Length: 365
Image (tube, rainbow, N blue to C red):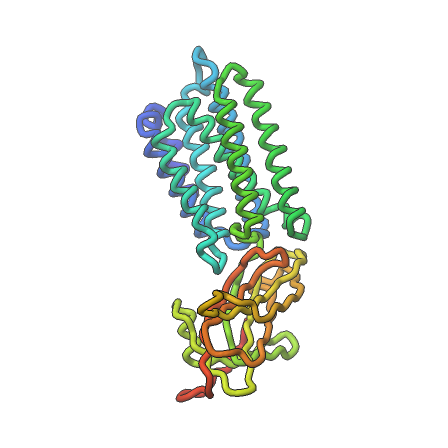
């Protein structure tokens, strides 16, 4: 991080003004690279400190930029530092976005993370398109509210040690309260600005969109992430050790290929999952076994629920078993009790014993 900051501070402010748009884009890329390298667990003190620092940096820089641009007659150091403040805003928002993208992207269901990829692209495009101050203020404040809401989704469950619809709604209330306080400060510093309607419309649209994504089951259930999952012929727990019998061909599933499980008459299959949760967070996990029917689509065959407790680096381990699985395509959804998808295990079932190489015994960590 210092390798990025020191050359920037050494640059004359006139050079920063000249290359403002390029520096803004570079700062966002630098934030993503820094977070991707250093961020690990959302409940780690360093990660929490970094996220808080990014949020605070975004708020302070936005307020100072608004203060300067609301006073055309201003002279002095703060006016000269204006280009640097814009870069700080972009760096802070870019770093937040990269952190959100990293944590959301760790979900095993990659499709649920695509809205955040689009938003990150929107920030980069907005840096070039929204060049006038009033438009940029509305756009930047909209991004700030999205960042506040996303940050609250991360941190409120960590603090409250629980998650669910009530916790999510409370996260939104916290984000709205902080955002209103920021807008009040902006209004005190520059009440004559005319971007307020755009700010409220943008923030309202973000609030509605995120709420719809959550209650439609599209948003990944952060801070939960899937650490490991797989399908096995059996899973046995002895003390704190989980041992599984895997079919050799099923190991191809790790390379993105759907494994084929050979099941003899009277046998069963087990799906194992390790779900990471922050320290002392307690919630329930659901394994939903579904088989694909050519005429009716995916049909639920069984549902298994079990509680988890957070804090283990490798995730809280558990498994479910399905007796006498029929031939065909299967999937097991790993989700919260509210139906938010954490991960999915896909495989096919073929009748008959395993042929060729013997089954492999694995220790699941």
